[in-house]
Length: 182
Image (cartoon, rainbow, N blue to C red; front, side):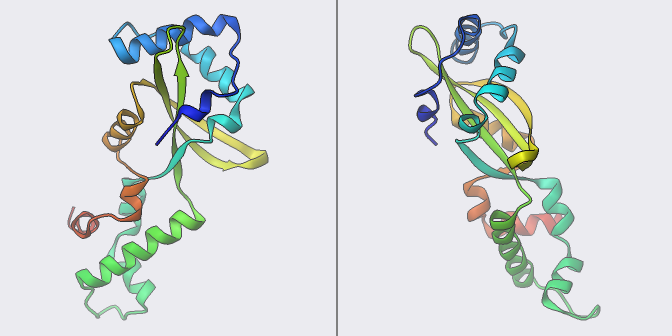
């Protein structure tokens, strides 16, 4: 994912430039966590929500999948009787169909990255998740911090139990079956 387009038209107020410098230093150099990050996050939410939500990947939390990936759901989807056996092939067909429907119709969450560039020209990304309907009702933002790159945001999402982007489009069969055995 390329977050570079995020910065093309954004002009941050002077008071946020030091916050951005500190945030990039934290992500790239291991400097202390910057103070006033919430001011930067709030400013972006209020002033740049369209750009903030431009770069994203769909994500589904494992807990949601675990609720749906059960034999009862497969039986209902396939119109099987209670006594009919549910096979691994049935489970895989259901899971793939379910993921396709969710990616088209929702509900899913979005994991975003937003590139910031410090006064020296070095870049890092802010990572966040959004929830909610969007549109007039807006989103709820869950800021995760500042990271060296998009891959680091995705690693944190995975650690927090999210399946992100490509993982949703073509998961391995065994990954899907593990929900029934886990």
